[in-house]
Image (cartoon, rainbow, N blue to C red; front, side, top):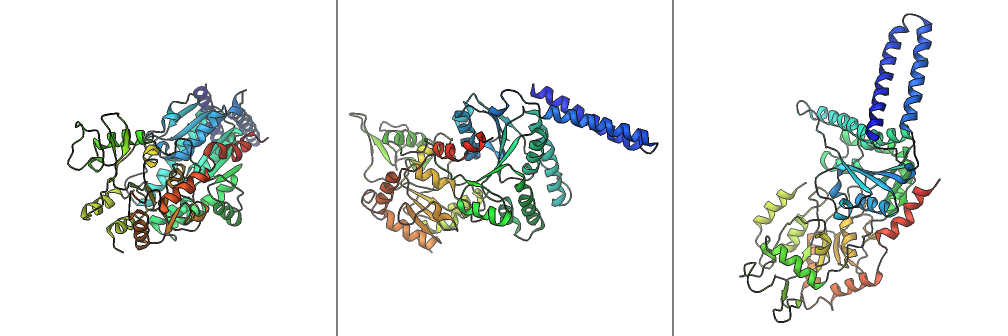
Amino acid sequence: MADASASMTLATISLIGFTLLAGFYLTTLNLRWTLVSVTVTAVLVTQLLRKLRRRDALTERRVCVLVLGDIGRSPRMQYHALSLSKHGYSVTFVGFPGTKPHQDVIGDERITIIPITEVKGLQVGPRMVSYVTKVILQSLQLLLVLLKTDVQSHILMQNPPGLPSIVVTWLVCGLRGTRFIIDWHNYGYTIMALSHGPDHPIVRLAQWYEQLFGRFSSHNLCVTNAMKEDLQNNWNIKATTLYDKPPAIFKETSVDLKHQLFMRLAKTIPQFQVCGERPGGETERTAFTGRDPSDLSVTLTSGRPALLISSTSWTEDEDFSILLKALEGKGPQKDHYRKLIDTLSFEHVKICTPWLEAEDYPVLLGSADLGVCLHKSSSGLDLPMKVVDMFGCCLPVCAIHFYCLHELVKHEENGLIFKDSEELSEQLKSLLWDFPGCEDEGKLGQFRRNLRASGGQRWDQNWDQNVLPLLTAP
């Protein structure tokens, strides 16, 4: 139905274009042809708008979730899609394929994933030409994809990336009478500035673009109160703060589940194996857990090492040299850090860089002893979602300082905040000096107890409170 409607729409657009061209030629002949061409064009435009805005009984129960990025690496947008589905909405999820989304998204009958391809511009000539052609091609592709879908009540779009998706989505929403919601995770121009510098023409253009077209949305969501104030004060954009909250899958992991995960990981990752033992032997043990053959019970080994975890997307806003220097005891970049790791010689530290399935990630967080966050916000206004997930698993965190981090990490309450590798090194020593003996008695244990006691709101309740009213408002 949607494909047929899209074909009719494209045919009407083509006819309008032909009429305009013919009218331009005929107007050079006399006034009568001018009136005819204007009338025909007006009729065709009216018909086109009627087709684009044709609604049915289910239109108000349809929402498009859009991210111009890898769907599997966009957890917040996946949570949006699941929340919409729980409330009976049919969800069209548009984004790049790549990383496998969470199984709950894949298995949800109300969620339809429409993959789009990340296009490339011309690969010859100046870089600016490549960038401009990429934007044009991506705009046309996104426009056609959105017009092929059934009319939606809302389009909920992630920003960044917002170029060219903000203007294309605004155009489609205007043509189809759909309400437009932007979920501001950060500012795209500040991320671009990490590579090009804040004064680069492309960065300045991106800032102007976000500021101008960001105002055209019906509603706006953002991730911190600091960003809410910044949007209002500097860009005159009113937003609702929707803090990232962990869904129910993020929780402390039982000893049995820890052991099952560690046994699977030990098959391919030597750091999870017991020194001197090969996986698949008679004794079912890992570096952290063991199963008693007499009663099959699982326990944490008494002399186990601390499991420190730092989630990353290997992007420029995370400097892993800080952690490596801290571990050494001295005062899109994965290959760089892996080479750096290979050059270091640790006596009591082992490092591995695994890629986990979406279902295993919360289990590993719930199995860890301490989290480290090296995320430095490019704008200073967003919060690291990885820390939100860690707190959902009652995992204490050491996090690098930036402007609004205090909205999430409370120093000496649920974790520690550091500014450089030397400070992080001292914090690691103070938290892990007698591990595992200090696990329950020291600061590490106190932080974990504080996280358990605070409980905290989960994603579903937070979403129902802040987003659902926007969808149901007249």
